[in-house]
Length: 489
Image 1: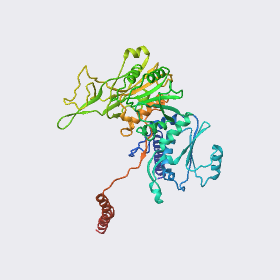
Image 2: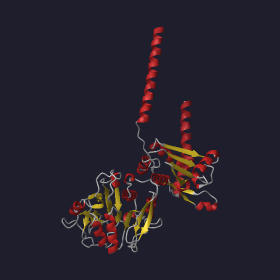
Image 3: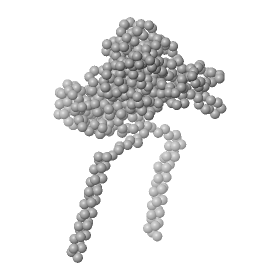
Image 4: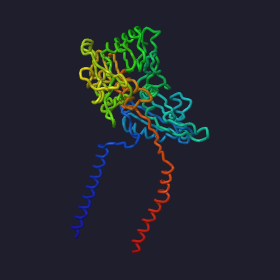
């Protein structure tokens, strides 16, 4: 009997050991090989590509100190949970060289005094301190939330409409990486919308400013050269043409490693602007990109163009596979191969129209006979909408070669607040970053996390109340009766 019991004990011991080993192996594999997925509606628990790229740029230790208390009567107290979730994602994506510290001013007075002395601050309420390489930036936590302040007049707390902490954090991190701000000049005087936060381009302007850049209007009517501190010039939707002197100033600037982004207005007559672009390798064509669509009783003309992003350059490589809608008038672009070869200009298409579109040369609106594609007259595929020209450039954008850079888009309506989309904004921001030598930071930018509210009718509310107050208790009582009846039987 004894040997049998011993054998059973050994067998049980080996089984327990095997279970323990399997348990450890499964946990080890799960810890080292896994995939995280975010199925939330607003992708709240995922960082944008640009944020991940920025975090990788920090080669030295980075400290983030969150100074706040849930007991403070301030809007920031409502987003502390969101801030902690954001910091958790940041820590996950940068596991080394990052320390996140939370300091409660009401409980850790000694630490508060240390921070005030170190950073020479008078107040440390609801702020984030970003410290890197003997530089630091302060972020007001309240700015990370979009609040409706109207309830404050009735003595109530403000209503949180959205959380934009990732945008604010990414902007501050970019400011730490590179001391000083880039100056982006927007040409004025030809009907272009002003580059201010309250104008028609406010969404784009706000996003540029969060890239550690300053948007400044530029008029060439009284100056003979582009300002020395110009990192790039933007010509957005010019309604009238440049004069000869302005065209000469811009042409000379592009020759000496200037950087320019041009969003064309196809309905405007701008021959000098077109000639300036053609001299640098990109020629706007006199057409309108469109396609035919089948309607119930006729064929219609679709002028809102679906553009497919190409991966030819750093500015669009991380946007590959995305589509951008270009509403309104859009014209195609072509390239002078002989000039490109002679001037050593590297041309790379960035966006092309979907397969069904073509460049219609007879594009007068409200044509009674309609339109059709005429081979040899109209411009067929590929229909290029956006392109990049590098003078003396190289195809590998990882090499930092000082060149003149020009990006041209055959449409401008997609940049306006009324039409801008997330992919369109990513293309615009990626273009700006590429022009100012920050092409490695191009990618999908951080987004707002908005609060989603269900809009229920009175009938739906009544039905919901009936289910919760009557239906669910009745179902529980019915199940209880069934169990009681079976036990009795």
